Image (tube, rainbow, N blue to C red; front, side, top):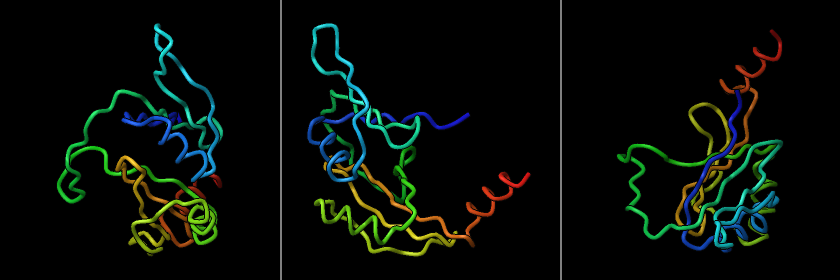
Length: 141
């Protein structure tokens, strides 16, 4: 199995689609309409066959408490060079919520929020991290 997509319900779909396409550099894959012809959702291609499914119909967001809320906390995206990727994204107007930090699992990461408050993470996996070591053990077995 592989991860297929994450669905996000939003209030301003075109604004969010623009954010991921022009800010992050992802590509729009396709749109699906309702029976009446109105827009229902937009699939944004992340890599291979992995997508963000951006859905219309959002109205309000509960207050976000990262330390206590159950469920969804953030969406994390891999990159090969976090400093370069962040600089490219910032040049396209993307604002970050933290500096580039080193995590307890020895990776580099930075947090940000999309225009509707969904928490996102950008991460660079380093060779001394458990994620890298696990992936290597799978690839070498």
